[in-house]
Amino acid sequence: MKAVIIGGDAAGMSAASQIKRQKPEWEVIVFEKGDYISYAACGIPFYIEGLIPKRESLIELTPDEAINKRKIDLRLNHEAIKIVPERKELIVRNSSGEFVETYDKLMIATGSRPNTLEIDIGSFDNLFTVKDIPSGDRIKDFIELRSTKKIAIIGGGNISIELAEAIREHEIETILIHRRETLHKSYEPEISDIIIDKLMQKGVIVKLEYRFEGIKQDGNCLKVITDKEIVDADGVILSLGMIPNTEIAKDAGIELGVNNAIKVNEYSETSITDIYSSGDCATSNMINFNLELYSPLALKANKQGMSGGFNMTGKKEKFAGVLNTSIIKVFDLGIARTGLTLEDATTLGLDPVKLNLKSKDRAGYYPGSSEITSIVIISRKDRRVLGAQLAGKIESVKRIDVYSTIIHNNMTIDKVFNLDLAYAPPFSTVYDPVLLAARVGRKKV
Image 1 (tube, rainbow, N blue to C red):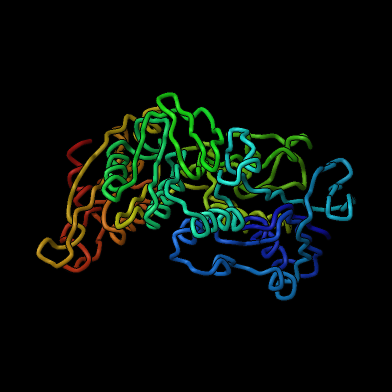
Image 2: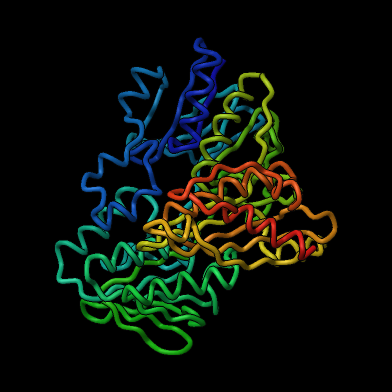
């Protein structure tokens, strides 16, 4: 049997590795159009900031390890350009031209690309996106090798926020431009306000309700055109979200879903037999809420790729889905979220109520005690916890994992209150912020 995988990053290499574990006798070929596999894209802002001095630290798996240790037939600089399902063929292009590769099972793990609004990034030497190691190198070199004084970042999502810190830590004037009155819609307004306040405290200029309309070159600088003013900058980073790379699937007649991602079931199967898809190019479902999602997150890509590879070998393992759990660092502030927003829950008809609570992350008399903000979304219909968002000291917001577990298991606010959570003054208050939220929340629903 021959399994062919398009794409050599998180989902693709997870699938390939899983196939070789289950079926070591199978031929497994991975076509990767670039020079790198299995790199830590989430670490790129910290590499730009200088916290990670060596780019090699971002590489999780080298080509040599994939080939010699995992026995995967890895082919770099090979781009899959067409799938012919009726003949189980893949047309591939490399430096020597095009050739045909047959397959028995095919995995599409083509990932995603930054949304550039069709602006030709290559026509500017000071316009950037962030996706892979070379894109991180471009920004890092621009900062270190040129007299960069001002950089504008377009967008209000997690990467935009992390980049704002990374650039500002180089003592460069940093401007964050975003079209909404709050940051990314996955954050409740109260959490968005906390993030904005922190950015501004650290010297980031935040321009909200500025609709981005284009870029113009002006000598060595760029002009960012918005509906309110033109902002001058030495360099500009477009951070406008990700677009799934699904053109090859669409051309093959494979059904697409939300955000034009490849529609897959819980076994990573597409609408065409023997073709699977995982990672940033594929859909997923939100656990317990039957919502089809496009969720380009690292853990989802790795887990869905592993599950998809397992299923390609003829076994059956369901990928449970996601809760869109995320956590970021904003200077000395931690921000985390999981599950539904208030808007999501309202749209689903769950009659939600939002709890907004400020408490201490450890005993108030213990050194280092600080405030943590907890936003908890609860259903009046069945008292289930539907979503949660936290803001506080970096280590304190890892409590989001407790909330993720709560939502995953459909727990009511009453069951949350009954949890026996650990207490000691250096770690929490007697009523941990999770329990305190439950104590207050029981009175609200």
